Image (cartoon, rainbow, N blue to C red; front, side):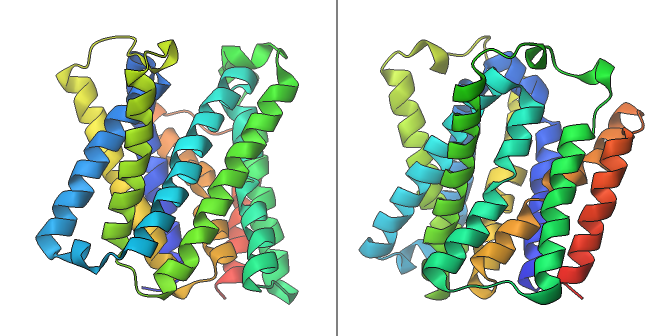
Length: 295
């Protein structure tokens, strides 16, 4: 399977997994939810890695770079995104986080020599613009989250969201050389996930209030967390690493950024509520961009 479809499949995994995250994250709290799903994802990835023997291919220089990538992308990036959502609301934070694709393209140009020209550049612009429009105008007024009614802490929220996007781009860029060298995607994901979990666990052990669970973990909530971890963090992240083996880092980031658009028809099926006009407009632009990129 080509890298374009691997990245799109990863975006679909993230979109479907996010449908199951809302209730669990509300029940446990964002940090506790993330800590539990990282534990599950880490366990599954190491189980697969030991079952296939892929862990034996890991080398110390690779492990060190994977640890750094996990700390930047999974721990700092996710933490900054959650903090931005608390200040801006999920919609506005989502728009700003979508800039990670632009950061990835820019950093890939500066450090890897990757370039976008002609119709590829046009397609990239349509794709990113479509994603942002779908997030910005994809909800009706009555569906807006209560967080978005308050403009408090706007500057810090914007800074945190952009920091999260930059961390996502940097961590992806760091992985590209490793994947070209032939690093196993499952073993690489296991190391990155272990780093993220270890740092989240440290925050919890230090007694930070934000890291504590709001409510106890129930079997139903555990089921939601397990499915989310399996789809989003195990399958989704492994597909992204596999895509980086053959695809440019900037292009992989662009294709994988479409999850906010892919989630729209899923929400329609689940909640039986037709998306707003902005969601349709964004989806059309995104599909047009994808068509130009994979023509």
